Length: 352
Image 1 (cartoon, rainbow, N blue to C red):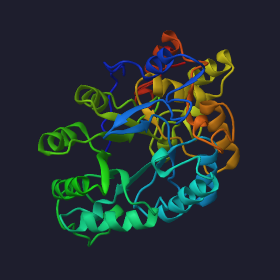
Image 2: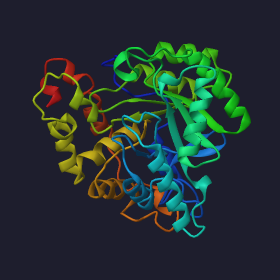
Image 3: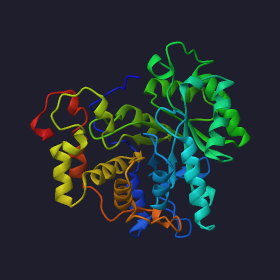
C-alpha cells in the first residue's frame, strides 16, 4: 500500500528511550541481572524489548538461533510465507530454550507474528492464528499484528476475496486475547487515519504499531499519534532496505543509508558503524527496532553494537540488555532529522 511521507522533524513528545535506559545507571541496563531483559517497556503485563530481530527474507533456524544466542529476545515473524518462515522460527525458539538448561524460559522471549490480510474475517482470522501458534510451537503468542489493513492483487491474488474486514479480524482476535491465546494486539502498515479508526473501534486497544521508518522516512504523523495514545512504535527497515524497491532521486548507491555522507560523517567522527548510528538515532527518537540479517557476520555485528558482543545471551538473558556507553548528541540527532524526505526532493547543502 502507498506510504504517507512527511518532512516534519520527528521529535515525538515522549521521554527518550535512551534517557530512560541511562537513568537506571550502569553500562548495560534494562532488566535486573537475573532476568537480563533488554531496555523496553511493559506491554500487556509483560516486558517488551525495544530491540528485537526481524526474520523477513525467510530467515531459517540457524540464523534465528544465532540471534537468540547473541542476545536478542524479541523474534518478529509473520504468516506471509512469501517473506517469513514461522516453522523455522519455532524450531529456533525451542532449540534455544532446550540448550539453555533451564536458564532461559519461554516467558523470557517475546514472540510476534503478523496475520496475513488474506485471512481477514471473523472465522478466518482465529483459524490462521491457531495455525501460527502450532507452527511457532507456543501456547501463547505474545503479539499478533494485522500485517496490512487489506489485500491487493499482487499480495493476495487477483481472485482472492477476504471473508471480512480488518474490523472483523480485530473483534475475533480480541476473543483470543480474552482466552489467553494471544497476549497483545497491534498493526503494521496502517496509516494514521486507519489506526485512529481502529483505535476508536477496539475494545482491546492496539499496543504496538510496526511501520517503515529510517533516516529518510520518519513517519512522523503516525509516530506522534502513537505517542499520544501510549502505543509502542516499532520501526522496520531501519537500515534502509525499503529504498532498494523504491524510485529515488539520489546517487547514494543501492542503499542510501550506507551511502549518505551525513551518516558516514557521524559514524567516522564517533568511531561507530553506520548501522550503530542509525539504530541509536531510532532509539533516541523513541522507535523500537528489529534489525535483520541473514549472514552470521552481520548478526554478530548487530549484537556487538547493541549488547556488547556475540554470544552474550548464550547462557542467560543478561546479554540482551542495551549498552548505554554511547549516544548521539542533540546536534547529531538534528543532522539526521533533517534527512527526512531528502530522497523525494532536490538536494540542499544541508543534506550533505
